Image (cartoon, rainbow, N blue to C red):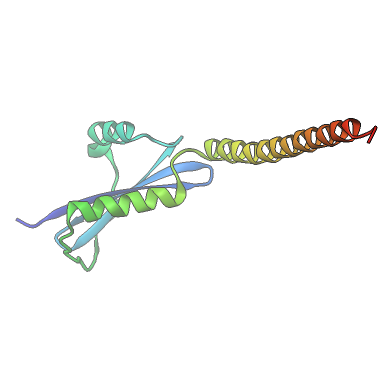
Length: 138
């Protein structure tokens, strides 16, 4: 009995999230494409696989070269972390909101720094004026 390998790749294809199921069996690959709509969560993907995997319509099998690479679970975890950190997790709207928050933060820092410098300058001028008033008669 040969090995059967199944992969699920989820990616964003304007304006929906798409999943591609690939099944490699006996050196032949077949695929099925599923449109999810909104970004699916892990538990939603798991539930989808449990409910609808048997009803997927796979393409006809095509010969392929199967590379049997034994990779450690830690390496796979590192690669997954690297992929998610590059793009970030969240929808486009969440990323836009985060960008807006960062811009507001930078503006707030600049504004508070200017206020702080103005307050320091005002205090310095007051001290200088007091000094002049003390030495007026001499």
